[in-house]
Each structure stands twice: as C-alpha cells, then as structure tokens.
Length: 209
Image (cartoon, rainbow, N blue to C red; front, side, top):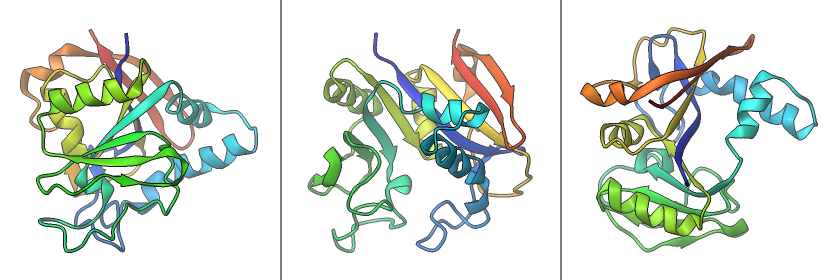
C-alpha cells in the first residue's frame, strides 16, 4: 500500500527545523543554511558513487516516490497574495522533483509546468484531499512530504503520515520553527524505529505503531 513519507528533514538538537525570518537571502531562515551541510556532502558522495550512513539516508529519500507535497513556505519566500506569478521555486528551471508537486497555499494560482517532469499545483484543499490527489498522481508509488515544519505537523496531527526521518545535527539553534510542537495525542501513534549516527548527524526514523 502506498505511503506518505518525510525524508531528510534537518533538525537542530533543540528541535528547530527552520530558522527565523525566512526570506530570499535566507530560504531556510536565518542561521539555518549550514544545518544542511551533512546532506549536501552526502549528495556529492552519492553522485561520486561513494557509500556511507548519510549517503544511505539520502538514497532512501528518493526511492519509490511518485508525487510530492509541500507548504508554501518551502516553495518560496513570499507571503499573502502573489505579487506576481514569476516565482517558480528556489530550484531553477529544472527542479529536483520530476513529478507532480502539490503546494499548500491560501492564495491560488495556475499550475506551473517545469522542465524535467515537475509540475507545481497550488491548492487550499484539506490535507486529506491533497493527499488523495497526490496518491492518484503517484500511480501506486509513495508520496513524499517535503515540508516545511508546519506542513509536516498538519499531516501528523491528521494521522496521515506513515514515516518521518529526521537528521538531528549537533547544533543548538536557539530560535526558529519547531518540528514537533503542539501535536497532542497524535504523537502517540508513532514509535522510534531506527536511530543511527554519523559524524555529521543522528538519523531518527519514526513509523506508525
């Protein structure tokens, strides 16, 4: 049965998955840019044919993915009504998704077709409806929930997430957006299935009980 999965979401030791004041110069929030060094190094090693703990987790995040869901904060820095529709994401003309991407936003706009098979769809539908659309687009494969933190929390609260992989980086950030705040009883539906450490990050994988 297809699953909804989160992979490679970087978290500080004090639980932040994004820094404060996200903007064009700081797409992940101020102070968070260097938190992803573990992943960038692993992606280079993967491209070079090297192995390692971090490489394995990056590889897993690409396996059997047929569609993607993300929040507007992950898609870009603008808030409120679109000033214009020229913004098509952080990733240039050929984004790394290569599938249908469903972007949660209160401000709709037409779908954007990109190079390499990525199409961004903008939706204000409930999470259950968006997930159903994503599963249909994935055609039997799994759906990746890309983030950001608030979007991951919505799917956790709704009990829709099957697997959550966090890479805990040994840094204290001191501010930003927590990943696992205000989940209530929803967190009781999950257990820690795996904890593996590398010199750069501790990988923690949560799955449904």
